[in-house]
Image (cartoon, rainbow, N blue to C red; front, side):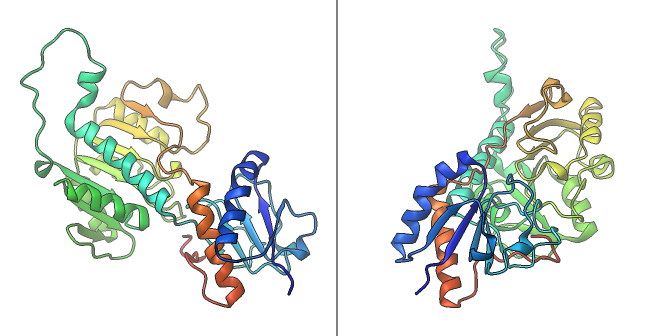
Length: 313
């Protein structure tokens, strides 16, 4: 029986990090496959393991390929590619979810407790009367209730926060007030004291957090964006920070990465920049997701985490 051929389309550094975990995950499932770096003969490839940082790929040359398996959760860099006709699967991995929950929970608690005043403000002033409210008295909004957003909303609710979530499609989650539509978005941003952005980047969400939404937001809102940089209109956010309508922005994703040294986010006193570390894909666990989809493809079973090409995620 012919062994399936896997083409790893990413940079050399990722190849070195992923090669052994992918081979180990395949072996765990008894899959004998040939794993190649690059694709000099695309017509021989059965599965494409793809990182969005790879060079431009003409997917139409992969005439045998049964699926493109994305190494990251985000697919905005590939989903609109006209040469892509194969099924596209995004990465959904427990470590990715856990990392995002830890990042979001940590920064929500940081802002909720006002920790910056104490950690950064060692100025000899005793601020004993500045006691934060309890979580039950704090409103947190989560935009995006997919795999990551739902997990983060649930973790925050378990700590006692009053959590409201919004998604383009109506959802129902235990312990979370779920809203959708334009009216739901307006209601959420008008009352949330801390706003977490975990929406996918699609034509419908591009620049969603712009002047209009920020004008309707609760004064002094804290914005946390570990999702996609394109969700925010940078100039509108800077203006809202300068005017005091936004109290602080903690940003992990940006329109251009790495964020250029001259970008105003680096130099604004009300902005915290983190270098896209909220939810890294970890090869040791994510390789098992890839291997399972390859097993499914070989067995003629439905793929996991298929992307809805029309919706963009």
